[in-house]
Length: 163
Image (tube, rainbow, N blue to C red; front, side, top):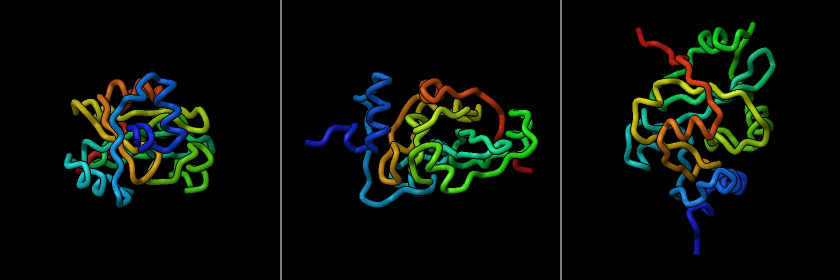
């Protein structure tokens, strides 16, 4: 018999147990959902209800940015928020080294290392959001405030504004 947590990556399943939310619904899909659009289509929700867990480098230090699936991160706003000289997207190697997960499956918490977390305020526009559960094949729903709290995130405005 498979349990909901067995659908998640083992490290993430352990994080769920540690947080006391091991009964959380984890959905596993036969096909990978590496993009927010693919995940939204598989779940049947809006792309903006997907949480992207993105690793950036701020002056060489990894930082996690949580952003809704239909928006882009404004790197300049992240730079200002952190007081950094330079911010750039992290390499796939740094993402795996920092989080323990591959791009496309990075969850918002349960990482290999403790990383500073910025959560875009736009996530709070939804009653429930969906995030990766450690693999490109698994996702879980959670109320945004709870998800941000579990991630240890600071609420910020780092969404790229459309002109």
